[in-house]
Length: 401
Image (cartoon, rainbow, N blue to C red):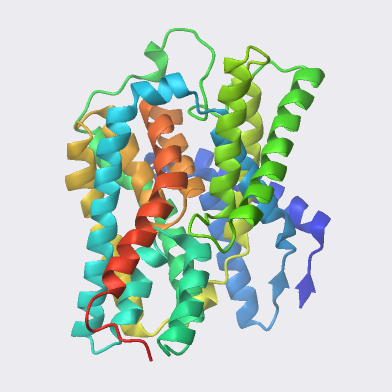
């Protein structure tokens, strides 16, 4: 077994990003279907490690940096959220939230229905639904433990982790192709037609940004305060009816900091620097998450469970094409939103952002998509998902063991 320490893992993650950039730049298929660079590089490394494991060689990474990077990314999302912009996008956020809620209901109904049809415990179908797909690894781990303890479902946690891993991989793979299909039907803004301006938010992460050491430290301090206060808030809410995931608390603090300092006239957040630090955090987080994927966990899935997840992937793609795209206006922004929905509908919000960046880097900016998806995917979806899951658990065939 080869164990990489903190520094070795950081070097490996950086090389994965460089590999992904090289692959997307040279492989026409990856570029044509808007596959995010961290996904391309991370999956190649994950496949290589799977092959090495077949030769009894296992490589393990120090993933202690993964959680702070994810939290730093959500802090920058919060620091980018301007209340004035949110008010402008209020109606769009509401419509998108309805579409997202519809998918949660469909995912659980599909999971339970297929599990019952295949002779499996309906709880397994629920695990292969919104719990792990829209909820991710954190939500999957929490509900997996509950299903084992309260309902007596064997190996629930293992199934949850494998299902969430499957979703993370597929969420990063189908978003680009879905967007490519939809963009053929609409007129794109075109980067070459864009008037010269400073890049906004996370839309064009490779554009050059002017920064100074002092302003960089100011922005870094805001992110650090968001992390500290978010963790303290999470500890305060733990065990109460208002308990939320840590990343939601960090995002919330970032929103309050950004808008509170602005309202008091004390400080204006430097959006370009927030975007730089956010994109660095996002890229490294995805690189570590994907290169450390244990693909053999997916191979260990029972064939019926794997079939359910495959159908869920098809359902996600069809839902994005025929529901999300249509209700969001059937325009370029709707196509970018559909790509983002694939990301967090199967995987996680960072995957959604990476999907949208891959699209906007090629076809042009979509301000509304980068306003709506982070807020819905990082904040509202967790609250709605809990409500939907509990409603399903109230059905008569879910009886605690």
